[in-house]
Image (tube, rainbow, N blue to C red; front, side, top):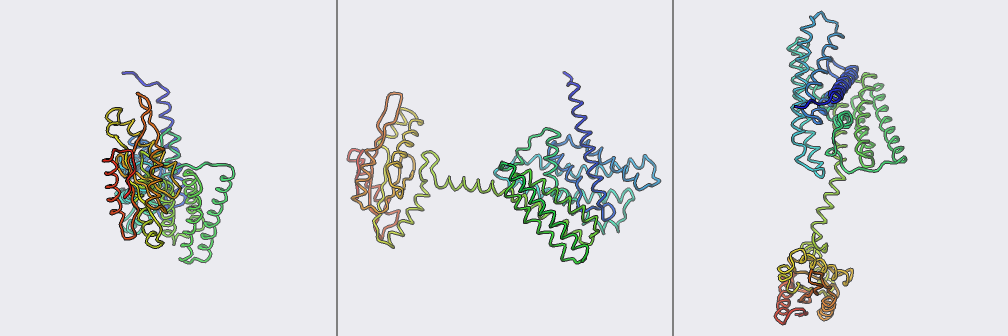
Length: 476
């Protein structure tokens, strides 16, 4: 077996070391913002671990265990306990495995199922991410508290008093920061994250300046709300933090996905930092839920362009025939029924033509279906070119077409159909150009007649045109 080059190990080792350093730095920063023992407003290491498992799968297990173990030893160092080092190591490993296994289960499950939906199904991906994050953080908080009870660092009374804040803190960190850390780690591990990104927007100097202005507005709202909460100490003031969703959604709808994710990370960091600095811990749950709700709204906002694109595509498919690019049968019926209503109200003439290509089966059998499809396309394009804007041509099915002629009597519609018949082009084949010929059945829709009844009469007229030798117009 060929051994991998040394530089491969060097690169892998560097990435592992860089990740561990990043994890410890994030953990240290969040520990500075604890407002209860072992509980912070939001817990970024949860997001970093979840992002790592989503991005690189099982390869993240060892680095996260190592980082979380070092964090546990660091915790003992700060507590200045007289616990033996080997016991500190066992306790730290227990805490590390409780954290790593919880986020590993959620991250690996999401990674396994993320490709079930394409990027056009971004709302499903977002909902799936939010649900998995909800259960994963609950599992992590529960296992973490149990681990702390086992090692004797937390009592059942403390666990009962802090479990909700612990869970919501983990949830806020994971929900808000996981996409940000996926972007960050994708650069470290050179990973493809195209599955994460919706439609991109171009960024120029002007939009960059606008993004800075929007972020300043976010900063101003956070500062005003937390300062007011600090000075007035009234529970209702904390709820004004939800107003951040206004500039945040402005960013979502006008900036690239990366800027939305970065703005969420900065917003949550500012809230957590100023929350801890001004000591408004009585209203912690309000700020935690605000971060979760604002992040969830932002993610679903990112899905709007893909939803609009998908709806536009579906709408186009219902209105346009995919082969000939003229109106579909359903769209024709919708328009025709509206025209019939106007006919009854305004008593204006309305005619209908049904036509198909003569000897179309013979064209398919002789020259193949590609030539047959080309005959349909050329016939549809020819008719479309030589009718008025208010007229409508649609593919009825196979080689049959429908033509709606508002404002035309039967006699005028007969002349129109005959003119269109003569304009039909010739189709190129390996044996030369063959003229496309068609037979038409034309009727004028009566005031008390339904579209179905008019179609039946037009179909009978078309059959009469066929019996008379094809390549002609019969009106009824």
